Amino acid sequence: MDEELTAYLALNRVIGVGPAAFSNLLQCFSSASAVFEASRAQLSCIPGVTDDVVDCLLKGVEATNVELDILWLEENPCHQVIFFQHQGYPELLARIHRPPPVLFLKGDAALLHTPQLSIVGSRNPTPGGIENARAFSTELAICGLTITSGLAAGIDGAAHQGALDAKDGDKSGKTIAVAATGLDRIYPSYHRELAYRIVEKGLLVSEFPVGTGPLQRNFPRRNRVISGLSLGTLVVEAAKRSGSLISARCAMEQDREVFAIPGSIHSPQSRGCHWLIKQGAKLVETAEDIAEEILLMLPSVQLELRDTNNSKIECDEIILDLSGSEQLLIDALGFDPVTLDSLLSRTGMEIDELSVNLSQLELKGLIDSLPGGRFSRKLKV
Image (cartoon, rainbow, N blue to C red; front, side, top):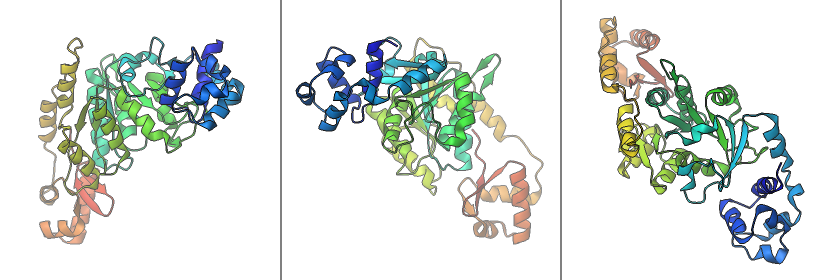
């Protein structure tokens, strides 16, 4: 590999050299190679460069374990790396404050230059949240948007899966997963199969070198990349203190659109979305609400809108073969989570009859069983 590219990768590996220090070093020296050849006195004058960083730089390129990155790049043609100054770096990401100097890629790198919408949310979502994430992702992927998320548990995983499952004739959905680890690792580990599917039909992205584990400090950095790649961010579910709100705040700071799906006023997983709406995020009820907004940002791109409102009405108007007691229970449920005691009071049923009807409605896919012995009607998108 070219000596300068190796030095660039090595500089990215030095602990304590974040995007700001990386930029300062390259501005003060002619190249990444020159950084490693500089003296202690020269390095100590650079803003953001600590004594520990200086010590690491003086040890040279070889001390950074950069060979791990080189071996990873050489082992598979779909493994790539792009640098901030080089052609191919995504334009939207380049506009954010302190963009990543290095991006490691695994999959279809061309997706970086497609119109993207990020979908994020709780790691512990409700069944309705999972359903919404999948449905919105599928619909928007069919419209022509690439769905970007963070490969995390919960809403992120559902968003990736919804995009991968999207089919419209010979068109299939695309998705980008931004990792908070090196691309030789998958976190959480049970998303390994999902990651393989993403590599086949989408793209894995990380700013972190090969071998980097799931360190807590790296997740906020990952979140700013998710929003930075995207025209807008949709928050499906989020508690008031949620990592998903970091992505939303990053999107606001980056002057990108923020969308939020409202929920029950009684649900902790809706409070983050309600807070965002109060801050100016656009309340959305259908995928079309988002697609229309994206069209205003991309006048030269024709996203293929589908009549989501009509499909919703049709779905709501399907008449199922319900018994009188099942219909009574459906009417009593509503969309807010309800306890067994509340249902007993609303319906006047005995506990045995209520339990049988709840089981029947769950088997028919009409209700969700929630933690804490609560139930709600299944949401439709």
